[in-house]
Image (cartoon, rainbow, N blue to C red; front, side):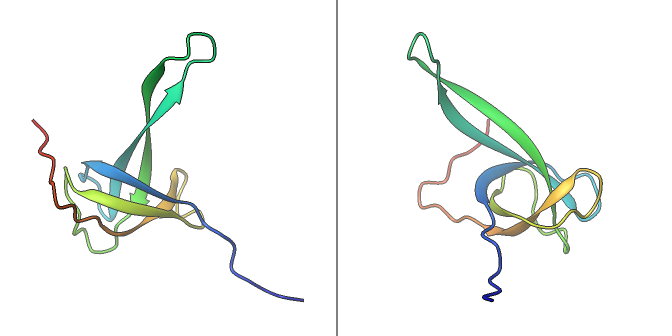
Length: 91
């Protein structure tokens, strides 16, 4: 029997809170199409992610990956920071 590691979801989002120890809150935004009116609208969801070294701060664009449950609400881990050439500033 072949024992492969399961595929884990990876999402890209922006850190909105870093007030907790070893935890950041990451906001994921996406577009959704209305079934009747066919218009796109923005939806967002927040995930708590594990940050072992507390190196990510508010405004950082990061990749998070699904992992085993670490606490009641924390099921994601921060994989790294996304460096973009055209850096967007939050105002």
